[in-house]
Image (cartoon, rainbow, N blue to C red; front, side, top):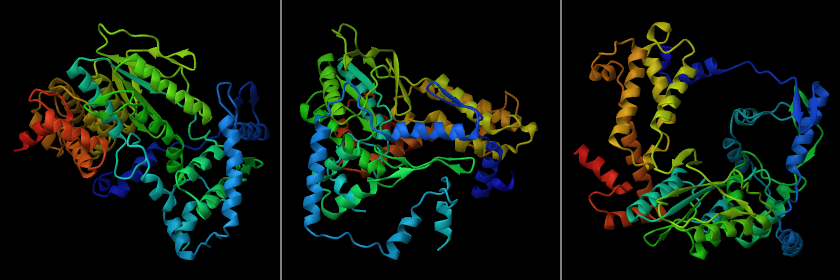
Length: 496
């Protein structure tokens, strides 16, 4: 383990060896009311499960008129495009090699035991079109944009409502198996109208026609399961195809003019892939956005689970709050919800005690021999584990939250306690010694660096909605403001 401190590759290899558990297959598998206890029966249940997942089901609230129309339209489109006589170009060796280089390692091999590594060691046109029309509120799987940008929009909308002392409603919507239940016909109809035409459209449609999978269990494979809905897992285009599928929802919300604004900048629905947060300053606006989402999801055959979708109210005192509904089901108003892995409560404060518990649980799970220096781990290695795994989990998303000084102090106090334990130091050891003996960086400094890094990422993407918000904050922010740009300014002043 001492050698691993200077060898990053060996470090991760040793961690994986310690964390790895023997591969064991379950002996009992249940699906609905069925129970299987032997190999053939378990394989049958696996096949049935994936068959259900890959076969479209029409819910009562779905509007199938659009599906019927796009099926007719897609057949006409394909007929027209084929009549043009534009053949699909043959793939050359260079393109194949380039595709192999991008294969992800560590994935399950196929039924013949061939994996991505065999191809790797044996030897972008849709993105460009869609990037031009992708909605500005969609921050998921976008080059050069962090998913935390959606969390940033939410945080700044909350701070704006507190500054103006107006109501803000945050609703997190839960889409059921969004990537697995995407309708192919509706998807390719959307692609055509977004500008993906000709031989490329036919090629993409052919990729999903007649697609099938097999489930491998204990060396045996099930019969073919025809995939009639959903997008391929891990494929390069899958995330782009999904964003194209739900882009119309965000377009309609923006065009409606409903929802929250920061000045004149609309932020009604910060989104990361399928993770949508609705922001509105009145129940009428919130209900209007919910109705827009319901309209499009019912036509696109996407199910939103209203029982798992919840609302949190900010500055609600004295406001007239009426019931919010989705598909005739009441949206539950609660004190806390989670969006993009960040918990949001009525006070818009991070739960630091929970963050500290997360960090401790992470380091304890990695140090099987125990946290104390005398239990077998080098203090340097233990500290590297803490910095590499525990700290990022403890402070995830805090760069977009407005932390109080005492909350940073709580994080530093908890970190110093961990550092004393892994070095075997007494509790009265000077703080400076606790850090310098292992070359540690205080967690508060790490958090400040994350804030500045996030700020620079926004600045580099000058045409984004986040950058527009920063420009507005620079122009209108006061000295006592709690918005993001004031926090950045204070950090820069402290470094001078």
